Image 1 (cartoon, rainbow, N blue to C red):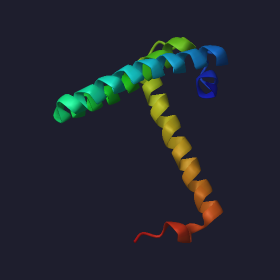
Image 2 (cartoon, rainbow, N blue to C red; image 1 turned 90 degrees about the vertical axis):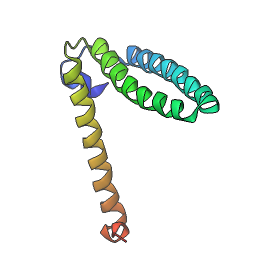
Image 3 (tube, rainbow, N blue to C red; image 1 turned 120 degrees about the vertical axis):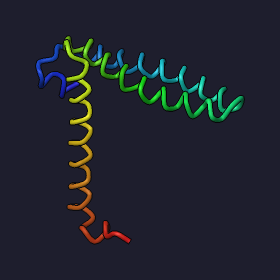
Length: 107
C-alpha cells in the first residue's frame, strides 16, 4: 500500500484490503484444486503448484497495478521483487544487530 503510494499510486487502504481478499479467494480455489489433484495424481498436483506460483505473481502484479492505476504490470512486478528483497535485507540486518553475528555462523 505505502510502496505503491510512494511511486504515485492512487490506492487506498479499504481497496487494498479488498484486493487482498480477492487474491486469497482465488488462491484458495487453486489450493483446493491442488489438494484434489494430490489425492488423484501427485505429479499433477506438482504441476498445479508450479502453475499456482506463477498465477499468484501474475494476479498480484495485476491487482496492484489496477489498485494504484499503474500501466505496466512488469514495473509493478519489479517493484514487488525489489520491495521483498529490501524487506528481507532489513530483517536480516535487524536480526544480526539483535542476535549478534555469532548466531549466524555457517556450520
